[in-house]
Amino acid sequence: MKKITFAILITFTTILFSCQSDDDATTNDPIVGKWKYTSQTINGVESEFDECEKKSTITFLDNKSVISNDFFEEEGICTEEIYRATWELLENGFYSFQDEEEDEEQLFKPVFQGDTMIIEIQENFNEDGMDFDLTVKIVLTKV
Image (tube, rainbow, N blue to C red; front, side, top):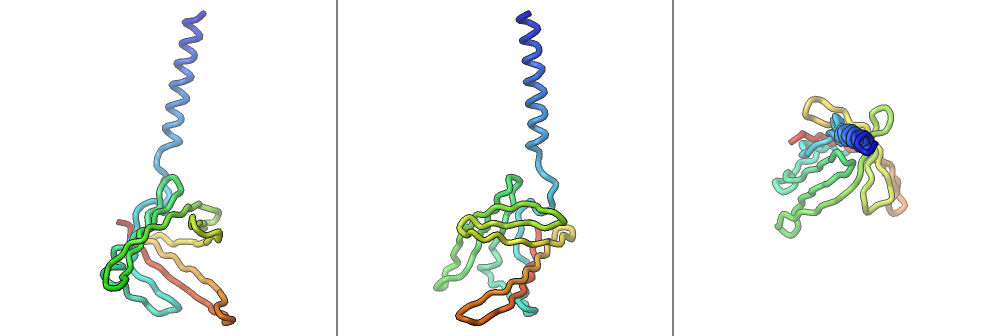
């Protein structure tokens, strides 16, 4: 009887771990990967990246976390800041993006064209009593 129980336990454990590895397999979500910024347009005006900013990347990981390596020039020195966030695929191709340091969630619907991702975000905000409409289009290329 102990041999049968042991055999059932081994079989169950084998099935459990083989199913678990399927669950851990990499996702086919097109957003997963490391992306570099190719271009950015703000309210219809293209904004050029300098050599330092061109080093910036954003990485969407299988585990739903995001690592953004942002480079900018400060007092003539190329400086890096790392931001962490989470992402989630919602319905109808929309994604949510949640910065770890902010409470606000950003929703966006990227368009994927091969190794290119295009994100367009429209925001309305008020600063110093003035209302602003902002449309940002970001083009990224998978590295």
